[in-house]
Length: 112
Image (cartoon, rainbow, N blue to C red):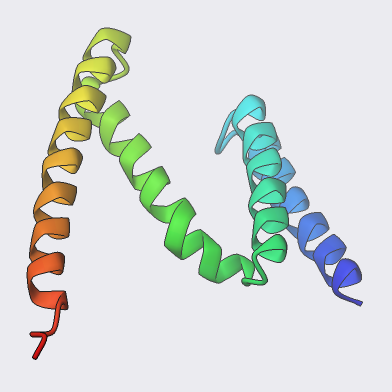
């Protein structure tokens, strides 16, 4: 039964994306990429026993936000995109290190 609902969801999303591509809201290539991405997200979500909406908000939305930010700030220039991605990567590594240090300090209970 789950496969049937997944098929209906894929059909619905595909029709929306095809319509958006035909109207000109997005390019045909973007619509095709979005369809493949949604099917992949749906498959990953089912494999992890997680719903599509929950997976999109946990994984897809942050990645899409990152991609939009990089393209917007670089104005589509590939060299600037690489620089922005590198800078954000460095900031993420530093923030992850701080997070791990604080978590280890506060997470351990005193041993008696």
